[in-house]
Length: 187
Image (tube, rainbow, N blue to C red):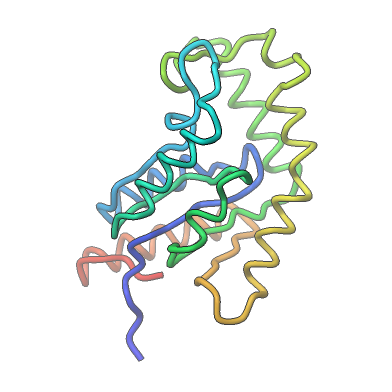
């Protein structure tokens, strides 16, 4: 039986696992429209978009036939899960994702490149009570459990769980070969 192209794709993983980078690479390969969740949920000066508006924005995206989301927040996770065809789970060990998160945060503080909507990471953000590093620790187990339960769910969406970055890299490489040979990546 031939595989059908995945046209609605969710990248999911713990904070710092590399979801945005992986989703961006997949968008380049597939040509599917990429939607960066931080851009949808944060206004300038780190003002969070109200939950109802976040949900409305994500519902509008997920109503379309083609999309890639680089993550999904728990308060509206049900929206993409209703329509997703492929979930790419980055289920890396804590040291991998935490190391990436710390390096990324430090580089963003040093080079002062905007993160989203003109926002910047700062030393104050890094050590605050709602620090992204603290969020990594508080959400790690929950996100990992979600990915693993989706993977074990019979009859659900296709779930690819990657336990090592090199396995994801290999899959993305295979997807790019599939595109050059057949014109579209497979789930």
